[in-house]
Image (cartoon, rainbow, N blue to C red):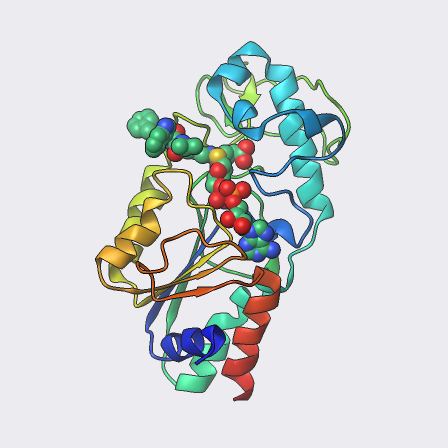
Length: 258
Ligand code: BJW
């Protein structure tokens, strides 16, 4: 049986499905994965270095400019066929099986491409590029620039309207706690689901990387979709070595047409 057939068979038996995504799902929308170089000025910088409180404390303007360049990239990008297929998945399965199924998207991504593709319930474990907040008092922040600049290398973050502190990117940096509600809910889903599809993540970064392991420990059907092997093959039920935007439409096609 092909990997696609095996995954479809499980999806059609499931009542609760978790789609767990990482940067690879947005790669075919033109968004660099976390472990790839960005283009232009930012090419020479290591993302892991910028995604840290110490870099922010050292240079607010440069870190803010880096995140503004990334926000600009995401605003210019469009959801790809993987995001779109995931948004259609629930309806496609329900039409085939005739009873309601629940699909939850848990993403490590800070872009908004799942939402823009039409997914209704999306949990962001590492925050969002579009939800800045005050670095002093946590009040919701705002942007100076509706159309952020791809090329600026130093941008003053706006001041908080409550306390005047600098607004920071609404993302989770290394050493910071994940948003508790989202993380607790993601762990519950990993324990409760029938099927988890793990798409486009290296599984390097904890504690998010424990979510698939939690599903495996609870004897759930876990399949990875990634050109690279990221979880040991003997731990998971299926690894499909394919890109997300090629694989997901094939899954939908089989559910709808076969
Ligand atoms: C495709 C594809 C296609 C390509 N189709 N697939 C040692 C051991 C264990 C843990 C630690 C340790 N030392 C430190 C830690 C903890 C640390 C950590 O995990 N570090 C590791 C690097 C080792 N974690 C933390 O610090 C976390 N917080 C924490 O632990 O807090 C403790 C605490 C408790 C109580 C109070 C206070 C604190 C926080 C982690 C936050 C991570 N944030 C980032 C940055 C977000 C903002 C930003 O983007 O700038 O989140 S890091 C970065 O990695 C980003 C991503 O969401 C995350 C995961 O990356 P992802 O999505 O897997 O992307 P890639 O690039 O790694 O992989 C892409 C994959 O796609 C590849 O597999 C490709 O093959 C594939 N692919 N094309 C399908 N077309």
